[in-house]
Length: 335
Ligand code: PEP
Ligand code: MN
Image (spheres, protein in one colour):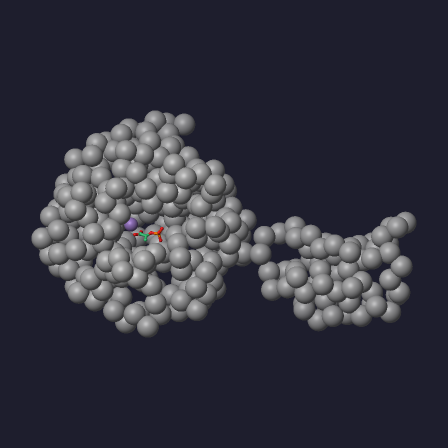
């Protein structure tokens, strides 16, 4: 971190600042230029409050050189993290499909879809039991009963389950869930992230609707700082000025996050587009950009789905995408 001191600042104030920064366990390299005094801060600056320093009236400017996230940073962990979910590996060249309905709706619905997605080539079953809906009048999910149906579908198919937690108080209900999803709306629910950091569950952390990549990485850092390093990041589209699609799939985030972090990156083309026929092209693009997995919404009767029907694929459409994705991965792996 570089701190530039305002011209004309008296020496006593600079010394006070240096002393305080040293008390934060930082080494300070001072350089006195013809016009400016510049302090180079060396050490773990992740705990330094940049806004606090910028706000001091003797400081002209503060620039970060290293990223504020450490555990999630590839610089300190060059090797890809590989996460094992019930024997299915994700990351480090291992790819997984996570598929299933937006919401669990009935025992027949979830079991039939679970069988279909497994037969199509997905190893992990997704399904929302607690649903974050914009309207309080919309279907809110089957809640604890939905979790029970997911367990039954897992028992019937062997597919580990991925489902969203919306509130800290529900954590005990998620004890035997295989992957806990943190939805876009909760990406910065820091108390929830801290609690998930104390568990040893794989966490699927979705990017917030208007979150930068750094904010997403900082949210991962919250979980990892608590001791849980099994975090997967999910690009699910961000909100832009565009309104022909539900969100805008940020393909560049997939490629860039792969550079910045060793954590697996999952792409969710269903929520990104909000349109079923866009899922295929976005899925293929995400895989070509380096995604370690895809999460795709699949429904046996999209027209009557209780949530997100317009973006749901029928099982046979999903199966076709699995074949195409595998073909793309084979090509990529040759290079
Ligand atoms: C979901 O996966 O069903 C979901 C609600 O996703 P997001 O948090 O990305 O909107
Ligand atoms: Mn959905």
